[in-house]
Image 1 (tube, helix red, strand yellow):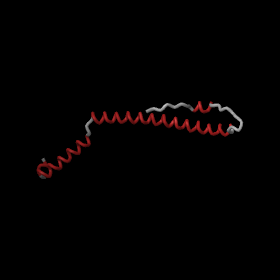
Image 2 (tube, helix red, strand yellow; image 1 turned 30 degrees about the vertical axis):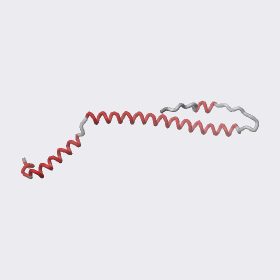
Image 3 (spheres, helix red, strand yellow; image 1 turned 45 degrees about the vertical axis):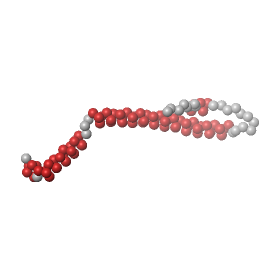
Image 4 (cartoon, one colour; image 1 turned 180 degrees about the horizontal axis):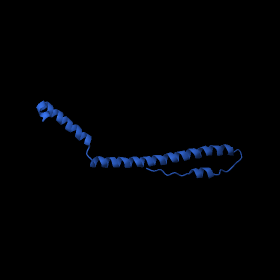
Length: 99
């Protein structure tokens, strides 16, 4: 879902407008275009940063899924064993825990 960008900051900077009688104030137009160029550059940078972050997060997520599928969750196993031990103590009493 990538959109096609028609203009670059350089295109905007180098754009020449024809002058006409009762036309726009060229200095005012140039100042406005300078602001547009800065904003455009900032947006391009933000898009690139977000694309890189997105790629990094996808890779990290993929690695995490692979790691989770390969390695058992030892904390869960420990918790289960501890619960079983406590249950055995309750069912069989103190005598079983001492052996």
